[in-house]
Picture 1: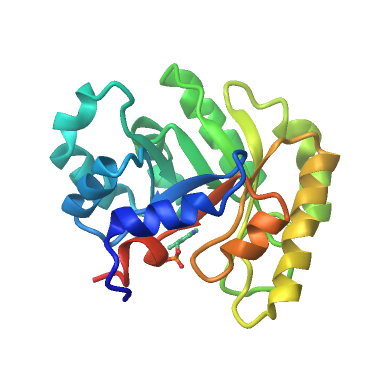
Picture 2 (picture 1 turned 90 degrees about the vertical axis):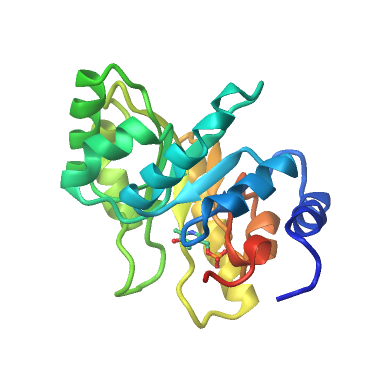
Length: 219
Ligand SMILES: *Cc1c(COP(=O)(O)O)cnc(C)c1O
């Protein structure tokens, strides 16, 4: 990985972003000391994909709760039904709501827990056997129900580009995601990872999910 430190890499990326694009630092697989480093560099939003790993790190970082702007945890991993309550308790934002059944479950438990989580609906815009998500037609069909699932707060759409696409194909995919979000009147787009964030920014991403570009390869 580049010799530059985390703070330099963060500021280098941030300088290239429009004011409407935020960085979610994907800290999965990284120890809490790396999160501390990112916090020292001004980063507050962190993405994790495993509940237990996140709980451990949140406990290790509990001394940061007193910061004027506290840490903001986003869940980005595949969410199993039996983890829904735990994820709702630990995360304010969930990027990976990939079915109507999961959304309904989250809404029911959030109501019980008196929480109103921000959610992104994960969409699958190209065939990809390794990923879940709503296909566009499925999302449109479920939309009347999804949009009414109080107390969830739908922010936007999340997508992951499949491996092996050319840059132009990735950008077209991200643009498709932007058009679908606009059609549903959703303002935010969680798209772009270390290998494709430039195309995602060009297509209007509002949340880049960056892991290895910031932290180096996961240990
Ligand atoms: C791991 C992960 C990322 C970050 O991946 P990098 O390629 O390391 O930037 C982003 N989004 C999701 C859903 C992930 O699981």
